[in-house]
Image (cartoon, rainbow, N blue to C red):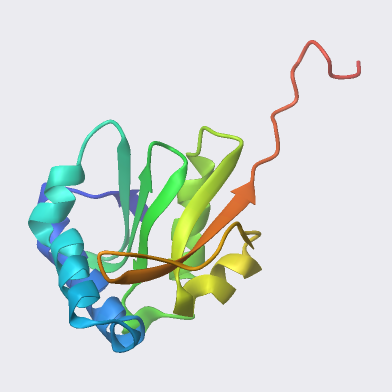
Length: 157
């Protein structure tokens, strides 16, 4: 089940993110990038980002957190990590769909880690700029255009 991140989930969510990051992304980064991510994914990092501009979700399977997703400003996927033992089981897809369903903009963006670019492409995202780096984290900017809702006044009757 996908639900909102709770205060009691902070350490488990952090652990899931770190396991996934260390197994797939960290090997390609400098120690600066790894340290940057440790700060972002720490339990207190999640707690600091809690608020109206951040939707934080978890994939909870009978009390076990299997994945974590975060949508900033209802338009930017800031985090999407699945426990390595649970990958390729639909957890990431379900979290991404839940985040996108909450988007309030013409497009949803993500600064995808390089190993995750293919995942986002399979879900309708396209590259939207050159590979970048920030605080040692290397990323590919991507965007997924969102269809506009049909205005009732202009819908055919």
